[in-house]
Amino acid sequence: AVLAGCRAVVLTNAAGGVDPTLDVGTPVLVHDHLNLSGQNPLVGPLPPEELGPRFVDLSDVYSSRLRALARDVDPSLREGVYAMFLGPSYETKAEVRMARTLGADLVGMSTALEAIAAKQLGAEVLGLSLVTNPAAGVVAQPIDHHDVLAAGSAAAAPLGDLLRAIIERIV
Picture 1 (tube, rainbow, N blue to C red):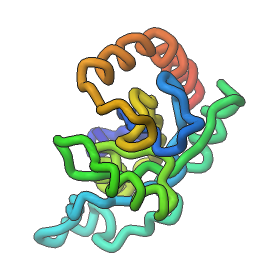
Picture 2: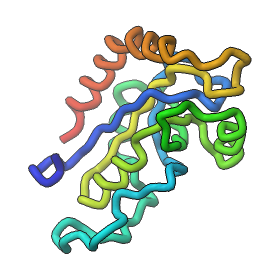
Picture 3: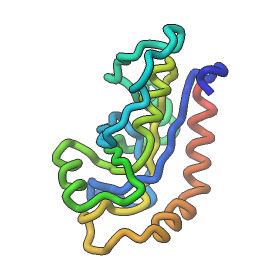
Picture 4: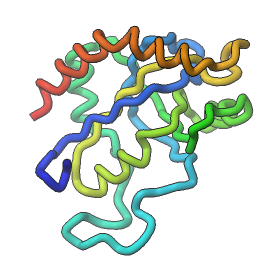
C-alpha cells in the first residue's frame, strides 16, 4: 500500500489488557511498542535505497499527529504501550508480568512488525488496539478464544464508527 502511494497506515489489533483498568471493549491508541517477537521485518538483504533506510528511527513510530487526530474524534481515548509476542499462543502469566514490568499496557501477536515496515517505507502509522480480554494472570479465568472473538464482534460497530471518523480526518 505504501509503495502504491498510501502515506498513512492504520493498524488495528485485538489485545489482552495488561493494565487491569482496561475493560474489555476499550479501544486504546498505541503510542509505543515492545517488539518481543524476536523478529524484525528489516532483517535480510539491504532494501533498495529508494525504500528508505535499513536503520529506521522508531522514536515516533506511532505518529503523534495521527494520535492527536484520533483524540480530536474521541477525547476519551486512552494511550498505551503494546507488547508483541510471536503467538499464536496466548501469553503466559510470567510473560504478562514481564511485559508489565517493561511498561506494557497491552499484549498481542501483531502490529509491531507491520508498524516497523510501514515506518521504514516512510508512512505515518496509527495503531489502535481493542481490548478483547484481560491478559493472562490479570484475572483468575483462563483466556477462551471464543470469548476473545465475541468481544471483537461486540465492539465491531462502535469501533468501525470510530475508525471511519478518524480516517476522514487523515489527509
